[in-house]
Image (tube, rainbow, N blue to C red; front, side, top):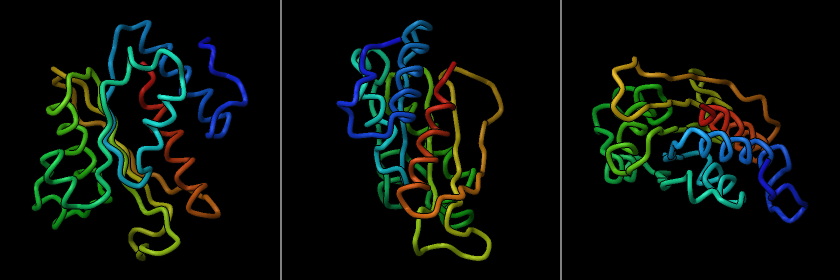
Amino acid sequence: MTECMTSETILPHEVTALAAKVVEANRAEGRTVVLAESCTGGLVASALTEIPGSSAVLDRGFVTYSNQAKMEMLGVSADIIETFGAVSIACVWAMAQGALRHSHADVAVAVSGIAGPGGGTALKPVGTVVFARAFRNSDAAPEGDLRQMDGANRAEIRRQAALVALELLLP
């Protein structure tokens, strides 16, 4: 296990403990990762960088909070956002693909959601978060997941989303 399991972290222990597993497992596989984050606002990348040696694993992260940023930085088409919304499997899949295109990483994880307290709708209530994982040079079908986080507040929803994204980065 890596050495950063002290109280000298700004993040919850469960987040940094999982981040340490992600760094160690990916380093062992010789695999690098890239993140495309929206509702987590860089929290997943921050968790990874809490771990010594993470530079061997984390290629880069994109915080694409606005729709414009998703389009400009990751190449998500306006049609996807207009048709399905930023909180959709189609959008996070495009984000993950864009993150791979604009990096040297082997695997990308993308996350977008509604952390609240406002912004929810009947179809996409607060706590709705979508995830995608994509691999470089893979013909595999897109991997996407829509989850309803049960957090009592914005911070809890973002924490839960970060944990799911970190799990997706495990080999």
